Length: 192
Image (cartoon, rainbow, N blue to C red; front, top):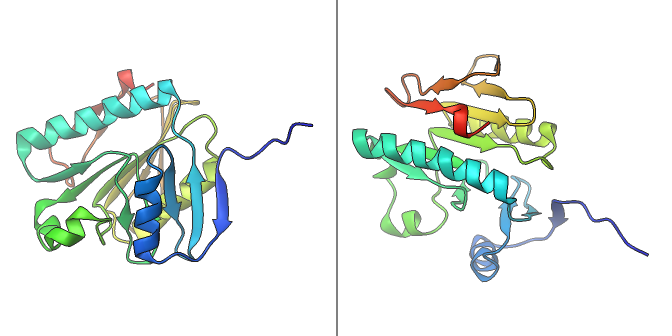
């Protein structure tokens, strides 16, 4: 008999921040997150197509930041300790330099205790939309100033901003970083 397991596991396990960091370091082939209530979320590595698209997304953000030098960019393997206690890893993120500089070297080296100013989630085919939407709302509630949820399956983008309704964009060719990421334009031709 074959037992079908969910692609993402959520477990109720009490771990200290130190234990959680050690778990992540000891199991680098897996991606871990924790909810604000401490539930452990174990996600498999992404497939090749999603990984390729995510690499392009991170590349474009990093290239813009290298040119403008306004902050720090992060890829999907970076975990952040949000103010609500959750440990989250957006697919791409950016933090303004002034905010990053408020952290100690030790804080920067672990899971930085800060919510990124800008976050992107690139849905994998197995991601439940409602869970990723809830994660985007969590980023906003914890201080994110701009967020993009990219749904490749339907070529749709949800744009998240504080205290505003979510904007739904169908088949956009580009996305603007607005005032948060001045002059950044994400070319979606390689993402879709």
